[in-house]
Image (cartoon, rainbow, N blue to C red; front, side, top):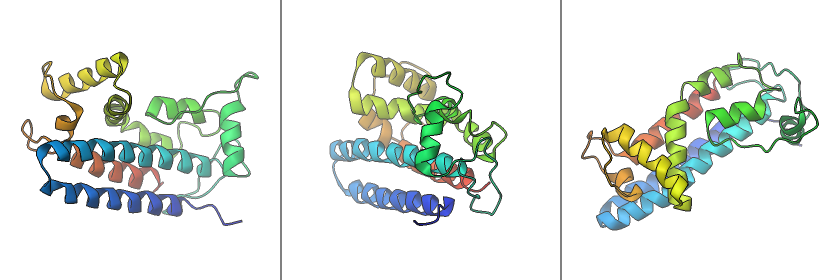
Length: 203
C-alpha cells in the first residue's frame, strides 16, 4: 500500500487546476455565449477539485500525516487509513448516529471533522480564513448544477454582495464578465482555489 502524502493531494489538485485553466484560456476565442457555457462547466469542475482536495487532506491529516512543509499534524484520534478516517468522521462523538459527511463549505467541513481534527490544527485555522469565498463558490456552483428556487435565492445574494444591487445576471455572464471591477470572476476563483489549497496543505 502506498504511503499517504499531503504533497500527493496537493500535486494532483494543482495539476487539475492547471488543466482547467488551459481549457478556460482556449475558450477565450469563442463567442461570449460559448465562453459563458464553458465557464459554467469549468466552475463545476473547479469546485469538485476543491471539495475533493479538502476531503482528502483532512482524511490524511486524521491519520497523522505531516503537511508539505514537514509540520506534524495532531489529530485528536489517529486513524489507520483514509477509509478509517472517513468512518470516524461519520461516527465519532455522534451519540450513535452516523453523520452525513459534506465538505462543500467551511461550516460543513468543520462539522464533518470536528471530533477528529481540533480547531487549532493549521488546516482548520487556514481554511476558516476562506469561509466567505468558499461559500460564494458553493452558491454559484449549486445554481449552475441545480437551477432551483433555493439555489436562485442564494445566488442572487452573491450577486447583490458583489455588485451592491439586485442585478439580473446569469451565472455564465457572472463568471466571465469583468465590467464591474475589471476582474474576470472565474479567473479569480481559480487563483483563490490555488492559494487556498497551497495554504491548507502547508502547515
